[in-house]
Image (cartoon, rainbow, N blue to C red; front, top):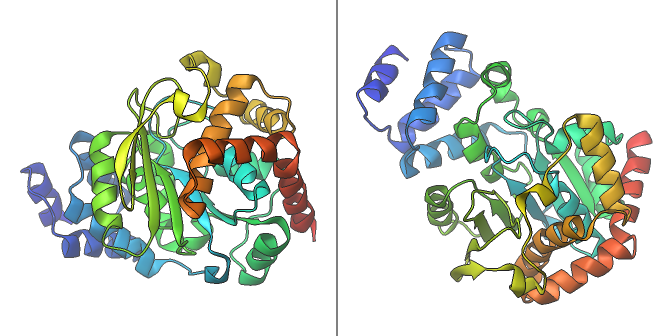
Amino acid sequence: MKNILNRLINHEMLSATEAKDVLVNISNGSYNTSQIASFLTVYMMRSVSIEELSGFREALLDLCIRIDLSAYNTVDLCGTGGDGKDTFNISTLASFVATGAGIKVAKHGNYGLSSISGSSNVMEKLGIKFSNEADFLERSIDKAGIAILHAPLFHPAMKNVGPIRKELAVKTFFNMVGPMVNPSFPQNQLVGVFNLELARMYAYLYQNTTVNFTILHSLDGYDEISLTGPTKIITSDKEGMLNPEDFGVPILAQNQIEGGTTIDESAQMFIDIISGKGTEAHNNVVCANAAMAIATVTKCSPIEGFQIAKESLLSGKGLTALKKLQELSKI
């Protein structure tokens, strides 16, 4: 590691193979916590290269506990996090709304590290069972239409990194690679990223796979469609811009989509919104993101996806999916 750190301090880049080897060695316990923290810090001070990101991704996929959900044509709705915006749990809510619309979802998530409440914090608070057992996850997809994949259960190789990330409490390159290492290898991916540079990298890496993808970045910094301004979109076959009017809704102010200040507040917001008791701003931003998941899978237009999502949310279909998953979690 000393040699690697010296090279990185001298502004050198790692090859994909070297980046992969570092992560494999971290998983083997070959490095101490100070070395790992130093390694992570480098990538807070400079951008990760495509080669490095590719190597990190390959290592995590090679080392993960794989789950086969290929029979279900699933989509994952996931953001990198690390945008510093502290919104409510938009992508998790959008996952249940998409599920209510008949889309099978394999939601990969984790506890919040750079934000108050990540996807897993809210799911845990609402009584959702975290498991890496194939039977339970298939039953979840079958009965509820959605499976929750809590990242630490599928990436045991990263147990040496988790406590360090928690202590650092700022975004690391694991925020960048997380959405690309869903252990169920979904056929479809909706991913939000915190800057345009990363959007380009993701597009480059995904174009070398068979994944049907949509990458999102709101130009005012959100790692999802915020409806507070235009959103850059890159898909498997095109790129462009999305505006609130593409969903038939007005532009929002940033304070209209702020999240709770505690996990309890975040969980209550989640229940209120999925139960149809959210504000119009809440409903619109959730349905805009669900719309893009629906559009990614079905190839409908954003506004068609939005109408399907709105019907799912307001008819209670998203809430039904949540209740089914809660019931399955008790068995």
